[in-house]
Image (cartoon, rainbow, N blue to C red; front, top):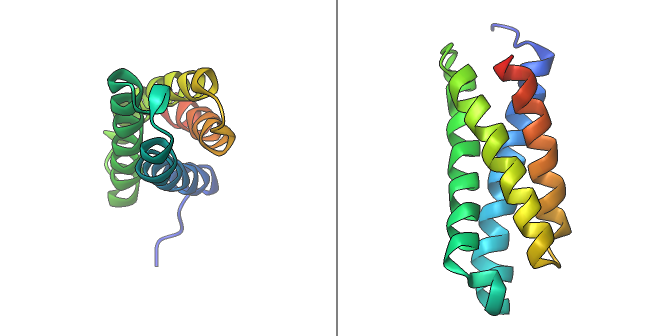
Length: 110
């Protein structure tokens, strides 16, 4: 079996973790909390973040060089999502997952 670069594997792991945290947080915590947690712009950003994380992980797993493009966008969206989740409040797990993913994706996009 082909060995994956440890930096890429860490990025895949961070992307998949962020995907899961953002999706679970949006679908449970945000929907139940309501108010600013379900503002359309915030909720759309969380969904975009989850999807770009999943897509970036997928591109790395299939071994396409196009992962550099998705990782660049993923880092940008994760950074925005972390800031917005921090603004909304009571979403530290999402903030942390987004920041870790953004950092990993910046390395992969370079």
